[in-house]
Image (tube, rainbow, N blue to C red; front, side, top):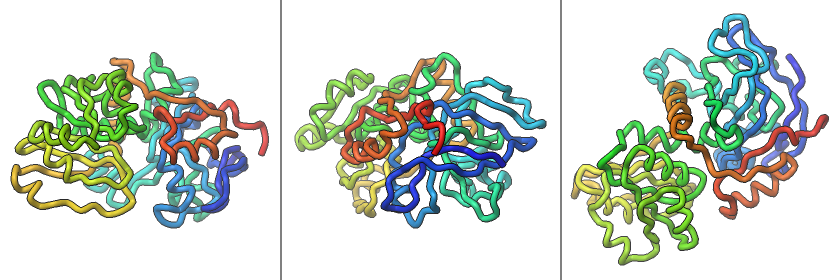
Length: 354
């Protein structure tokens, strides 16, 4: 074991503050990473505040991790000291269920070991849980470590490990590409990455937003068209147009408005996570043989493919860098949608001691 410094919440109502905790030593198949940047995901806030069920405390969030390899275990051959690497939402899985064998570890039958707040079978203390990337370093099984292209800005690449792969995975699975008309609902941390990816894949991209102030930003990011979704006549004009719609909104909203915009056999995929159950009208689906689906993050192979694509096309997230002592204020701003479009923590700002 070794002592690690990080930022943690001690309860659902406590602000994040410095903490020291124990990391496991680097084993034969492990990679120890010195963390340089960590993105701030809305999931961090939900987990810290026990909004998705009781969390384990102290809770050290963070699953958009970029850093340099500090050491490797004796059986590790894919990485060496100094490599630029990333860690996303998972640090382990069962490896033998149907999903894992298909390279879809995110759908592991036994549930993946999430990067933080997950029961950890290899924790340094029996019965312990995982601690995430708001910390000095992390030790991860090499299967779940990802190579980050050196030509990318490492800070702006951090959100690719969650916001990036969450939007890339459905676009890749449904084979979005040239000739497809694609709608992206919402221009936030997820939506802005979806616009960038869909454009780079060759699709004609329309952004749907409730905010007129985001029209120019949507076009700057590459959207070919922007529709204000509160304009009933503008929405009506989009009926039966789209092959694929990616819904990246986590606030409560009416998905039926968008189902009607799909062509026959079109697909709408949810990646946002509204708190309340949705009401879906059957006629919107059966009338044109449309489908409504959901998608989580991608598997490790798919995430590496996404990172390689980003390296080739120089795609990163639009970020605002913060020091770690600004994290509680950043959480408040995330809840107000006051960020374009992802906060990233400069981990060099972590204090020397707790």
